[in-house]
Image 1 (cartoon, rainbow, N blue to C red):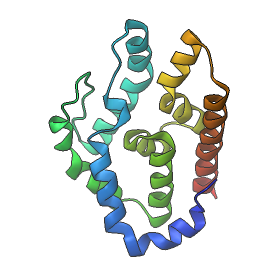
Image 2: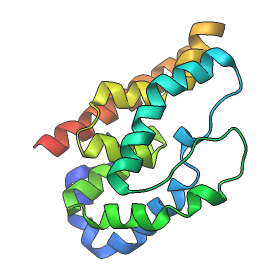
Image 3: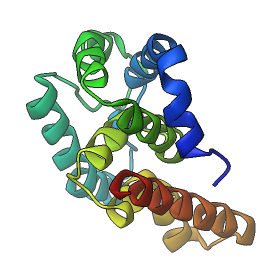
Length: 164
């Protein structure tokens, strides 16, 4: 893993507010909120992503909604809920959350992963759902496979760090 999670957890205190603000800003454009246009892809997104969005909304008392447009104003309103959630995390959890958000490209997935709602495999499958769907339908590219394998290991490392 490129990020030393033990060092990151130790450094969180100094930059905690800045990290939280970055993650709050990122949440309005979370990958799980932007769905595709193809029926088969939407069905898969609904099956995998909708339960995570629902879990986040229930646990943060937020109102994140999926869209097929670029309008994020509605999801920006939930920033305060994300901020509250992030403030409730320990420095270790926040370090893992930050790493998970980067690895999965999703604050919502990072929330579910850090709180144990989903495991590393489920986080990976959700984070790379569209890429995996495209590979199934149009073939795989070796470089993309290699990159996904690295992200999958990073996510597993994050879970191992949380359990340590």
